[in-house]
Length: 165
Image 1 (spheres, rainbow, N blue to C red):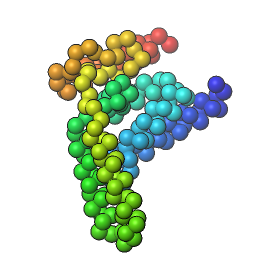
Image 2: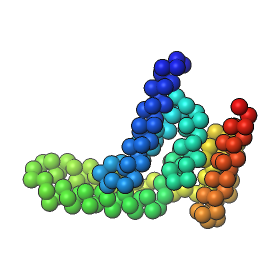
Image 3: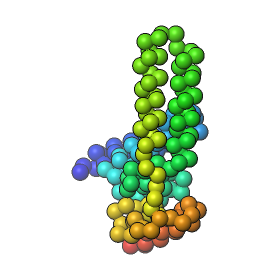
Image 4: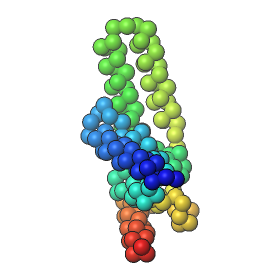
C-alpha cells in the first residue's frame, strides 16, 4: 500500500475517532458509528493505531465485544433504546408531516428492536482479537476485573511492541 493511501486512512481514522469522542458528549453525534469506522480505517492505514483503539480503556471493550461476538452491553442497549424513544417522541411532537412521521417512527422502532435482540457480551474481552489469548473461554466474573486485566494485557503488548523496535 502506498504511503499516501496509508496516511489518508490513518488521518481519516484520527478524524473519525475524534468525532466519536465528541459524540460521547453530544447527544446528536453517534459515538459507535465513528469508533467502528475509526477502527476499520486504522486497520487499513495503521495497525498500531487500531491496536491503540482496541486497548483504549473507555472505547476498546465495547468495540472488541462487537468485533468478537456481535454483542452490545445491557447498559448501552438501555441508553440507545431510551434515546430512540426520546427521538420518536420528539418526531411525534415536532414533525408536522404525517407521512414523514409514519416512516421515521417505525424505522426508529425497528432499530430499537434490532438493538434489543443483539446478544450481550459473555466472554472476557481482550482488546486484540487477533491475539491467541484474545478470547477467554470463561465468562468474565466482573466487568471491573475484566477491564483491569484487559488494560494490563494491552499495556504489556504495547510496551513489548515498542521495545522490539
